[in-house]
Length: 113
Length: 114
Image (cartoon, rainbow over all chains, first blue to last red; front, side, top):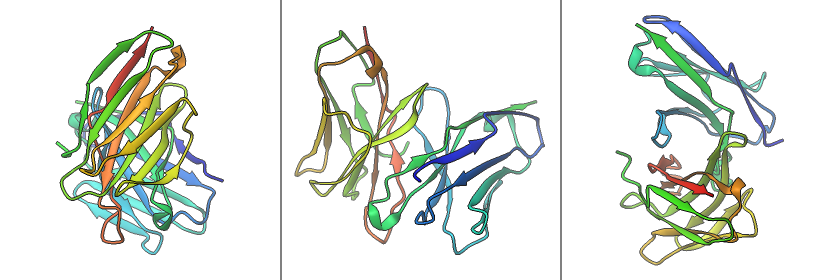
């Protein structure tokens, strides 16, 4: 029940396109859902996070959509740029249990100029 | 720059050896998490400390141990190293209270076991 499934594994879009990454979870006790961006040779960087009482959250060009009943959430990157080319990870945690993150498998996004 | 520092950046060692990875959390953060990133297992939680006390344990091998010191820096000790321990090891820190559970990752230590 700790698994977080992420899809697709990789994604190629043209500049200005909207990559969409999907994640599904099983454990209904999860109450914190962050997304991380990782460039080669770097640590994951926190992008945006959502809690189950909110269905959508936007920060700059990044939007999280959350569907509690379906136990799914997704990341949209609006007006994508070549600099957005990176690996994106969704994660889930239970804040009251110390917030240890359970990560999805990652999505490698390539934005072509 | 997340404010989390990790040393060393790279480590190459032989099977059977023991190494220590060090992490300094962001100023003010009380909680430290260790994660392992490998091609086959992805990013996996190992262990968490909060203000010097172990708070949660994940998929951490018995050959691995960690501690958090009074100055809040943390060390991850890996012993009897095997080829399969080659991975990136990340430390993350957070305030660790209901005010903020956001985790900020360090740059990682790349461990190569030969």
